[in-house]
Image 1 (cartoon, helix red, strand yellow):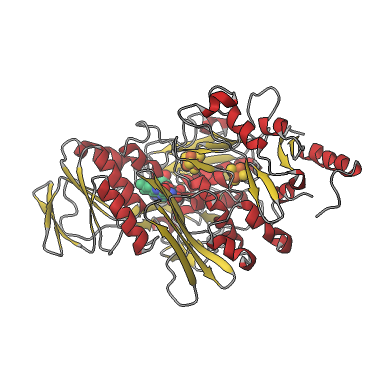
Image 2 (cartoon, rainbow over the protein chains, first blue to last red; image 1 turned 90 degrees about the vertical axis):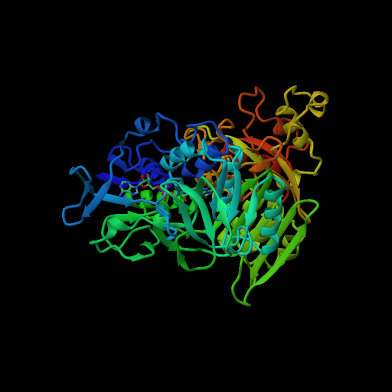
Length: 428
Length: 168
Ligand SMILES: Cc1cc2nc3c(=O)[nH]c(=O)nc-3n(C[C@H](O)[C@H](O)[C@H](O)COP(=O)(O)OP(=O)(O)OC[C@H]3O[C@@H](n4cnc5c(N)ncnc54)[C@H](O)[C@@H]3O)c2cc1C
Ligand code: SF4
Ligand code: SF4
């Protein structure tokens, strides 16, 4: 058996590790167009902000590939899949045959579409390569602008701030973290960032990146023009689906997969930021582009590629971060769009605590935690398992959601708690 | 059979005295004594937590899961599972305090340590001669360190001598 994995990141590594758990012998080839060995792109913001040492972004030890007997082809771009003969074509002209193929190609930053986007000093923030380019500009920059107020944008801003750059976060939405939190919560983080010397400009759209070859100012639709030598854009990520062209693989924003992570093309699987999966909370088909989902999908794909029959129970929208010592976790549906949901929030400005829970019927479907994030995984688990939480709802609303509270549900809903660990705790 | 030993909980032997929490914190302090521990600049933290429900006391700790969600979620590769011992460990030098593991651990066993900016979880007192400190310290034998089979045997024995009653 020949396993070929395109992508050397969360999903690709998850798959390779899973395959090796089942099949110690067969050849595994990982191909990546990035020159580096597996690194965590989620850590480029940490490096920029000086929270980790330079180059400390690998998420597996250097000996990983040799120990697992995995061949890596780094710096090689796959340009085509020939499904008639089961081969992938590399840019240099070489071909690599496969019996099972995984597309773990992730996503690329979306273009802003703003005039002047190609100027020097305007950067996406996705790869180690992007980070290296940003470093070169950082030295010369006095002022910087981050376009984007999600977790990555906020981390990028902290990064520029660390390099003593006067930083402004400029966003179209009326408050920070608009995709994942309420106005109250967003405003709280805005105050936190401003207290720490980072400006936040809300409700503005960039109209033009101005200057010569290099960026000099950004013009916004409210008429303001801010001087800057460095811009980081964060307009979201588009799945890298190009390779699926000309195959039977179905695309709906990302690559459609079934519950074994298989695509419509025999022997080809997809996982991670490129893959559309079923969200286990909303039940909608979507791309949940976060690390835990990417790794887990890679793992499920790998197990199935190696002949196990393992079903994926679905992805989940989730993210965690820490800004200036204030923790933030957002899980599931946190901004319900219709009246079928019931939301409760608790906010204490003094204690820097915010908590929101969203219910649909007897199910917990979303949560936002700020400040105190302990036991967040218990909530994640309640959502993931879609268990009836009516008997503990009051506890949840009071902020009591440790495992002891949850364990009350186990006896009545045993079928949802089949993992061996549950049998190990509630024994007698 | 690999030696997959971990800490098991016999919930209804727990009186909620929290001796295990103290033993854990002391074991993870610089001085390894209670007196020393309380005067350390960064207070040591316990990993085991006695969670108390209505009629339940649960000294809960990392279960070193078969399919560890924390490992799948860790974006820095700080978490690993030893295939021989089953132990799930965090390499503290790699942990970046991103709380991804906190977000997914179903048991609340991975906790944020805001003082150090790193996660905190049971390390089975690796290298400690007497095994995990919490187990040694528990006055009512509500904690058990061993393999699954040894634990089942222990439960049987406790039932036979009438210390624990019929299954809940
Ligand atoms: C700055 C930043 C911060 C983030 N922070 C978080 C966070 O805090 N928490 C979180 O959960 N997630 C975070 N994410 C998202 C997380 O990094 C992604 O969800 C995860 O990396 C997805 O993994 P993946 O394997 O699907 O794809 P990717 O990581 O995008 O990797 C794609 C791989 O495919 C390769 N590839 C693509 N096309 C080709 C081709 N044609 N030929 C050869 N190779 C190809 C690439 O070289 C790469 O190796 C962050 C992302 C960024 C950029
Ligand atoms: S920290 Fe939680 S998820 Fe990880 S092994 Fe321990 S109990 Fe399992
Ligand atoms: S807090 Fe540390 S161990 Fe947990 S996911 Fe983040 S880096 Fe990994």
